[in-house]
Length: 391
Image 1 (tube, rainbow, N blue to C red):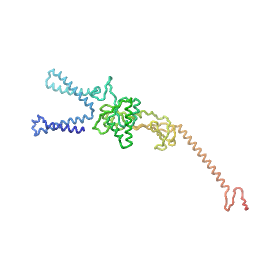
Image 2 (image 1 turned 120 degrees about the vertical axis):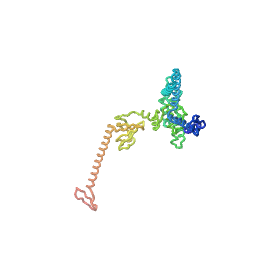
Image 3 (image 1 turned 180 degrees about the horizontal axis):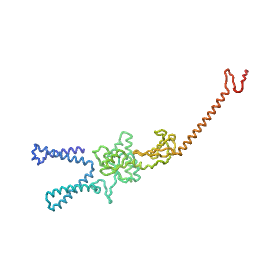
Image 4 (image 1 turned 120 degrees about the horizontal axis):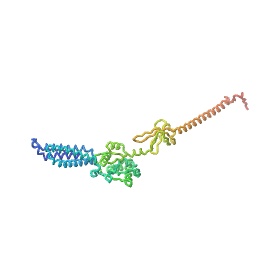
């Protein structure tokens, strides 16, 4: 849409130049001054379009600040020159002095307004000036943090002090997700709408649906970052990519995952804790457990303890963007119990083995002392020849 308006503006400039050629072109002896005038107007329009593209990265507030500062600077220059006119300076010197003061006062006016723009509520939307001159904190809600649902619990704790802004384009995205043909996406979208309704009914927070949109951007993330720049708000999100993009563009981000990591209990190497080994790890003889907050604990030589609660000594803690991982080993006391248990099992095994050997020896001795010869005769070794009586 913006590109179409720019092309229409350039076409209008060229048409104006062709229909109303400049009279001073008559002295240049060009064959067709209409086309030359159209070309000049087209180039002039192109300069304005380039300026528009250059200032596209700036917010409307900054552009209005520049315009207001320029107007104040030129007005000050005009008043100053009215005083200078009474000095009867030479016309050439007065003209040069007028140009210098115009540039100087324009620069001072723009810089002054840009530095003090927070004091002008007229050019800053969503700013409420109270007796202390403080402005209201605004927090933009992202789709991910709404679907996550934890923001509703945080709102109940009075930790959210600013006004929550729900952009209309974020609400539309939630509606599209809730109408998806994919059951998983549909459930996520409906959960997000339920969470949003719960937040709006919460008396501890103020929620406002805002209609500001940026059709020139195709993604919700880009619109959120731009809107945060315009209204000077923070972005509440769980999206890692949006977090990084917003920080690169100078937008403050509230990441609920960072908050969750910050609230986890601090664990130092050397501390002991009791945990239940749930499964074996990737490495040999490792066991894996989890804390109440979901933190994974990897324990060396704990595979035999799967399903048991045991004492573990922390050896190291690894902190990443995705979360925290704790490494540990079985404590000395627990190792001692395991060693005694293993030794007890070994002693019983050896005892049973020796007893089994003795039993087999006795059975073999009995068989060697009494066996049968062919013909039905029985021989008893060690007792002399046996007597075979036929009845």
